[in-house]
Length: 371
Image (cartoon, rainbow, N blue to C red; front, side, top):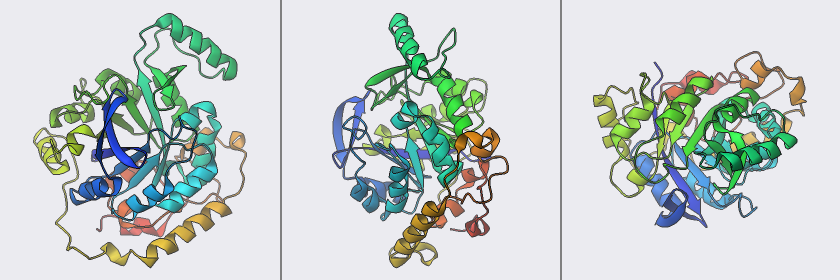
């Protein structure tokens, strides 16, 4: 049985963690490094760092903030925002990210998903999807018609699900959210980070209908986002029953940032409700680096990450079988496994990582289960 994950999210704007409601009215929630350290102490399963204005402002993500955050935590770190090219992916890995999240660029050029999957492996690639309920069907159909002129594969159904938005929720695309998630999975995404814009920051519960429809439609894990306000609402999103969201992970921000709950109290309640989660391990001594990794070892791993990324050959993604791109089938022997192993312990103890196998076996797999 795969354990469910609890993932705090850092929405970062101008170098500060912020939180709003439905993508507006943001309030300051602290320094990213300090907030990340807090969640590291609470033994969160992962942490997600999103530069929420990078795409809208057409700038690169704040790599220095990412690097300082990565150096401060021992849990897997997923980073997104302003990723427009494979060079951006490389720079984020080099700065300390374990996973890279792509949203706006994936909609603008879906082939970047396939190319990134070939470069770093599906297990380290997340496609983020901001979805909003359709209020004006006529306007949606007009946007959809424009999209079809650019990309005939994005054909909406007769009864479309919420619409995909880009640039931090500012631009409607005319793309059906569930259909887009299916396409992203086929291109090689390893996970879908699905955010309901209607529920974001409201703490009224996740959009279970949307999350369930997506989770049942794709062969990869779905991370539910937008609306988490209580442990019970997270449990509903993670529940695999007929009324649950069928998500593999739940992302939340407000209840954690403002100290309404801790990761530990949420996990304790989830356990009571029958949701399988990873219990926190015994506290580690302060000042002791896990597995002896840290300091100069971090920089050595970064150099290896850059070398392996740069050594990956240029591959025509259209010539690669879909099953290979997803990482489930036999992949080209020359394609390296995701290189960045700044702290191997991150992947070694993550039980959810077993849903995708690496493109090339790695020695880190032998240490699975240790921490």
